[in-house]
Amino acid sequence: MRMYLIMKDFINSNIYLSLDYFVQKYDVSKRTIQNDLSYLMRISPRKGFTFHNKRGSGYLLEITNEELFKDFMESLNEGIYFQVKERPAQILAYLAIQTGYISMDNIADTFQVSKTVIKHDMNDVENLAKSYHFELERKTHYGILLCYELTSFKKYLVEEYLNQNVFIQTAVNDVIEEFNDIEQKLIRQLNKEGLKINYNELLNVIEYLKIVIYIAHRQDEQKEEFIFDKNNEIHRIVEFLVGILEKKYAIGLSKKSIEEILKVLQKNIKREIGSISSFTNYLKEDIEEFIKQIDEKYDTKFLEDEDFKKMLLTHVSLLIDRLHNKISYQNPLANELNITYPMMFNIALQFCSMLHEKYNVEVTFDEIGFVAMHFASHMEKEKQGKLLSYNRIGIVCSSGGGSAYMIKIQIESLFPQAEVQTFSFLQQDELKTFQPDLIFTIMPLSQEIKTPIIYIKELLDDRDLVKIKQILQCEEYDPYTLIQDNPMYYSFFSKDFFKFIEADSYENIIRMMGQELEEKGYGKKGYTDLIFERESYVSTIYTNGVCIPHPLETDALKNMISVAILKKPFVQNGKEIKIVFMICLKKDQVEIYKVITKKLYRLMQKSNYVEMLTKVDSFEEMMSLMKEIGGGNNE
Image 1 (cartoon, rainbow, N blue to C red):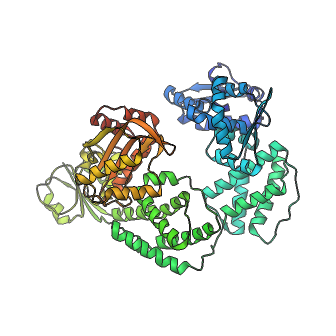
Image 2 (image 1 turned 30 degrees about the vertical axis):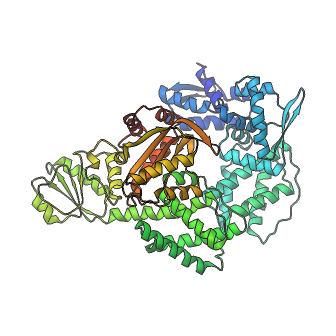
Image 3 (image 1 turned 90 degrees about the horizontal axis):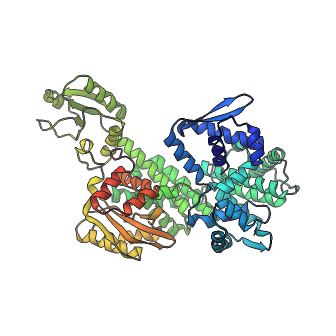
């Protein structure tokens, strides 16, 4: 919010503005303003502006790209103007950073709405506060005060800080200012003690420490002596941290605060050599049996990958230990993985269901995401192995000249270990003698060669090279895909499976669309049941009203994406349903599956495009809009 106001100051000024000007206007430290300006200068080249610095005078703004700058200012402004449905949560965050009572007038001014609107919002704010175990205390002539138990309040602040809430981040960062040196010292201390932490876990620790400092500073917490266990690595690290934090920020930490820091570090830090449980041998057998079944079902090669099996066994052994101790980690990528790697996430769901059945553990959604990462990593390795399997590649061009040489260089960048040779269209006998295991050609061949063929244009660009990799990672592909104007997945949509519907239940929509795909010979018998089985694990109602129902196992008779647009969107389980994309793909379409879901993930991040899609009048208009999102052939 402050950055938006600072930028408005620069826009409205035709003279240099000094650091002191901002320090006095916003009542913050000089270091805080220096950090703000340092950040703005760092991002300015890609945001359409630059600063001129004049010794003794300050800074002057120059706008270099009006469109980029406008977008940047709008993104900053989002911190002030909130959508109606977001406002109660933001009001709660605003109350959380106050140190005393705050009036309704003040809240209304901050959110730039009327006092009547704020009064109307307060019922939602109060209900939301109760969900965090907070209470709102009202006092005549004073206003509203947020009351809380400190442990719950810290948990809330950490959660909102990680969610980049503008009020919480601004308030905390004003106190913290610079934390990189603390983070680096913590990492060095962990290495010294032989302990491990991944990036997400480190983020959990760092953000928690920031909140501890913020609250200690805000409430003038009293320092209390704490007896650390010198023989315990975590105790030694916390003692080290408490010392540098109290010194740098001139704060004191109570016994309770130190105990809570200990708990957070114990939850997020692992020993270099994990304590593999006594059930490891049984677990190894269960993992091998599970991935053997997956290999048979999906024609994958998980069982042959020893590194994958070893890493999965280690991860799951520690996971089961942690879950038995009621410890689980957060995974900010879990939701994105669920949407963009649906097949790997489905495998992880089934795997964790097996763990629940055999080892009596409830695996959280975040932890399922970590398991899915292991399966996804192996599939990336399989993809690379597939590309490396092409050893002799022939390129057929109109001549053997400069354009042929350029294509040869580009193809060699994709297949660095392959022997690549170019041939003119007159050298097809030589091509046959070369015995290629893959051919790229700009024209139909007059001789029959039993080798995979991909038709290309005379000039390839970076998007074509990306597309080549995608094509070859599919079991079945159209050899003309690269020279067609439409994206690879375009043929998976059909006017016959596009409709506008009225409904009040997501289950009824799934049943109707699934049965239609079965009846028309696209989904196998039981396809709809498999979709409902997938729903029983995690809902496929995602962001901004976009839904992507799909079966637990991908094994259709024919490829199709059925689309239903709701004439009247409705809300189910707190999420709006506007448009439904039902995925029905054959088992060999893993890579295309990813392309499609990544496309739909980009769609749901753009609420304006979702709104445009819900207002189309025809199938053709929908496809034109879908092609526009993300850039057509760049897929």
